[in-house]
Length: 80
Image 1 (cartoon, helix red, strand yellow):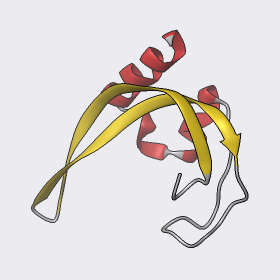
Image 2: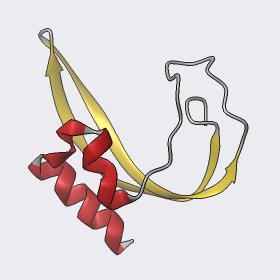
Image 3: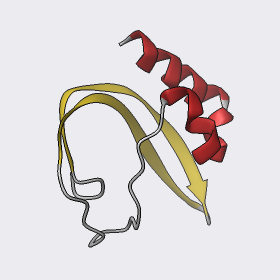
């Protein structure tokens, strides 16, 4: 909501990815959801652009989405 200005419904947890950057470890959680409402976009938070893309075109926008874990999560999303 705060970054994309979208209200969601039917939110489902897909999994998590462990990330290590600069000797710090954190986890990125992955979810799938349906859009309930698209609100006017506000650049107040970390993002400066909102773009809607087809799931099959995600690799063009998120270069690291070709990894094994991410691919498995995308396949899980398609089943939902």
